[in-house]
Image 1 (cartoon, one colour):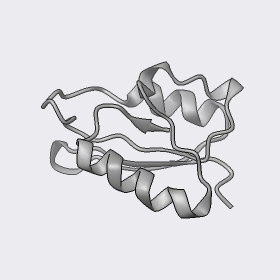
Image 2 (spheres, one colour):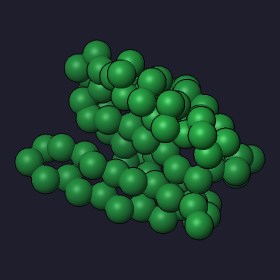
Image 3 (cartoon, one colour):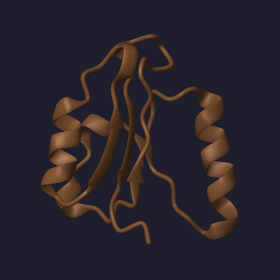
Length: 89
């Protein structure tokens, strides 16, 4: 699952890199992700988004963790860097 608010070139790159491996990439609103009903191997979002919006990902990360998604977060100098991984390997 990748955010529809990523830069278009980032979305294109992720889709292109995933294709040879047969990995399905879903693009959408990450805030509407239902972790309880999806087989999610990861979520990618950016801060600020492609439109310059600054969103609070706290609830998203907490919801992911609730369903066993392991998280790695760095909020240095006002920036979010997050990698959400669920059964990646």
